[in-house]
Image (cartoon, rainbow, N blue to C red; front, side, top):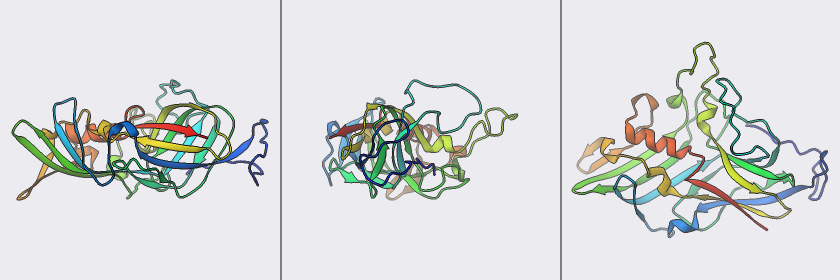
Length: 264
């Protein structure tokens, strides 16, 4: 996993080579306040496709968060480029947390964040529990359970998604074998976030689990049981149907499911 080097950081208030102060901060995550989630209670909402969803489980594993000077609109469009965009890292939280996205209570990351007072313009979430370039990864990065209905059709569903060998796809250009690296699947970026860290501040990741299901057509789910009736999101790009692809793409969307806020 990428490391953000803070030279000679032995205490808060140090100055880095750019003349900016080096700081420590706390980090937490929760359901976004406007979602209306209540800890321990199902979340009910209607999707753009007209499905009434009762969501009983929504858990997202975030392995790390990085802040950067990279503008959120920056995109080169190159066929072969690094997963980590050019720019200066302004902050990092390198301890993983499985976020209960149905609980609005702040859930602290297990480590302290480190950064500088350079202006932040965007953020990245790493959906992995190890090397972002590893050929396989067994960590479940999204767990969902609930029931979707539309008219007389009822779809009790479950899903457990990984981003490992099951997500490897062919290069976009056969002449460029690194043009579709697995790390691209594991990094949600750039998330717009215009702020400046300060000593002792708190960075909070807010998750809106409703956004994961905006485009999902539950009618395309794989039925895995008749009694009781149960449908499952496929955890494999090669066999995915519309519902599976829509959920996976929404998990990795840089606008909609995630936003960040900083408080003193």
